Image 1 (cartoon, one colour):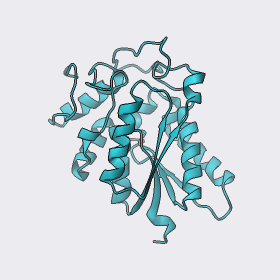
Image 2 (spheres, rainbow, N blue to C red):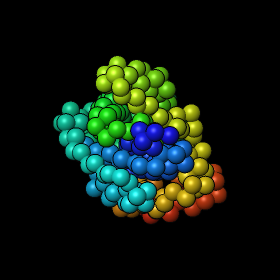
Image 3 (cartoon, rainbow, N blue to C red):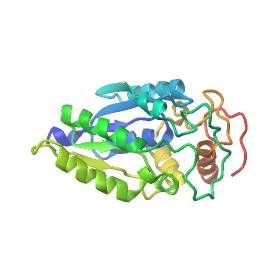
Length: 231
């Protein structure tokens, strides 16, 4: 491996998917991880920041970059950032785009991650998006990542070679949790709830998919919940 092939940027949201993506990057031979975390006015931004910072310590990150992208809150259109919109109750079978969708968020985040990767001589950008995300979020679909890879290839220096890696894009949340437990991901230091910093509500979409994954594996989710329904 060249130096470039041992470095990767990981989009670290503070959640379990991105934490697993960081450990997966290490398992694939990326020894130096550059974690990028963004605060964009989401309901649980302080807790998410704390979890992302903890992840940086767990993986002995080469760098941790925290960026505030408040323009996403000012633009609005999501129950994660708009106080006038309610976070809906979980519906794990719905194919509708949920109110938690932040318009074109991943394009914003990936653009920053690619800038960070190019400036830091990283050979890859990892994102933890997965199949249950792209059923509801347009910017989590495989076609979106394939198209964004073309943007990266065209829009960076000729000598720059950055691979956009979404290792779980065809996986379920249960698959991710199983892989994470195998890799020793510290899920106690991750946060998924859309509503609350502490405890997690247990009834929003993010909590439901997370609890469902642990329940399917016969494991107990190590974070605290206001309610722990069976999904």
